[in-house]
Length: 311
Ligand code: GLN
Image (cartoon, rainbow, N blue to C red):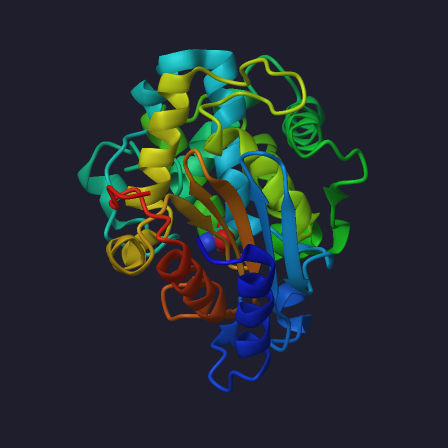
């Protein structure tokens, strides 16, 4: 296997000189303020070794990467009942698409598109107010990362809440079918805040490490979730983690991964490592352009892939 420290440094050096960097998301005004010039990468191996380069310690808006942690939280609380409200099929549509909801009785295709994640937030908020629900998600992420300093960026949360008309449409539409049970405003408040969590690549890679370890928390040796649920979450990350570019991502990288419009991607090499990359410029489908390229380079050099029998 390649020397990881050198490999990670080389990937960051290549990203630093890239001229085609994609477009920073601007439909959430606060995200448009971030420079496309950033790139960070952090690899935390299953054994706990860390390799980082570039802006690996700079915090960014994790956006839809948070959907993984919210799904973990909802699975811990509700088990398989999650799947009565949300499906497990790739959508083949944009992350904020509404079209399938009407055709499919208001049930979102999967928990990693906006509609599905909003339904997951609604489940977490059952029997709670929105402050308690977001506190539960934050506690989960801080615990997984081993870092109490992780927090929500209030400017991003505000920016999302005053411009999130499409998410409001998705939530209201699902509420009309009874897929969302609670008050729409409270559910959306949880969703907007969860998207606005700010983390660095290093924090994100640490938080995802249990997914590379069959669901076991590395510090305690205790299961965060069962090995079976971990396998299923990884399967969903692979099939649905990049919206309508999930097939292309599997083709190029071959690892379970979840992207966000802040430009972050969390990727899992089961049994090997948890990897986080960040570069704010996006592809037309809303996935980090240089982040995807970096993961492709890493997967090629290490051989890490769920489709590779030799690793
Ligand atoms: N907060 C963003 C939204 O709701 C999340 C989308 C994303 O990261 N793909 O549109």
